[in-house]
Length: 346
Image (cartoon, rainbow, N blue to C red):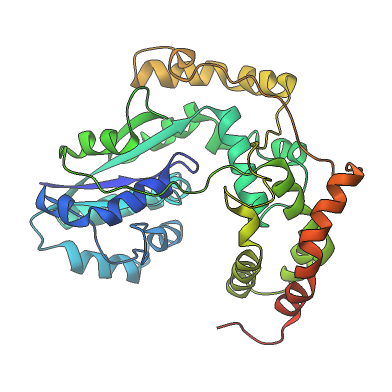
């Protein structure tokens, strides 16, 4: 039986890097017996996020989702193993009954399923995920509110999450991120049973932002009231307008931004809140680490000693406020046109 490898994340564990690496090495992977399907795949990176949402909508009496039927037609008669990748699969695979319908469908095509999961220390993960969502205007509140909203979610409780994933009719392979002493692509190649082969350079992706960039993104969102105003749009239209707003503000999110805002990386945790988070997850983390790696969690991930540097939106330093306003105020009229534009954006 052939194997369908599904790299399911989690978010902020080098997923974009892996997907760009896959895209640049499609031929080498194919020569090694690994096919990366075109169905649902993004144009510039080998990400299959469009395959994810239909899994959660896969009801008992419903037909196989159309996009998965298309994928099935693409891979059914191929001789190679296949590789899919999207961090969005994490949530979809936690819908156990619906995800098992996918496992049954892939088995009917002649594939057994191997899930590949990378886990990052929660303090680093939550901080990085907040940065990602703040700079993209997905979340507009302070870090503390984000932490309180998400800290009980199953995606950060790795013991609960892996226990649910183990209920799937699939093999689960779990790795730490970053992998000690190795590159993430070497871990992927080993679990695929391929390589090594000559690699092309891959640009780093989704680097963490500095406190001024996170402050600027939140101030921009506050001044445009984009979160409240775009809620009135449908999900697709809201996403298209957010994409335009991100393009408008792209310069400040570059690691080499001329004003130097990203030379120091954002940290929302204080030593006290980081210790609270570690205590919350400690027992479950050790269960996971011992189960999959045979060693305590701290021996793999160590301990991050955070120094908080979040800039308060309500009472910022006047000099910082002036500097940020000088950059974002010229963008506000263009942002207003994007948000207020009538009709659909193509």
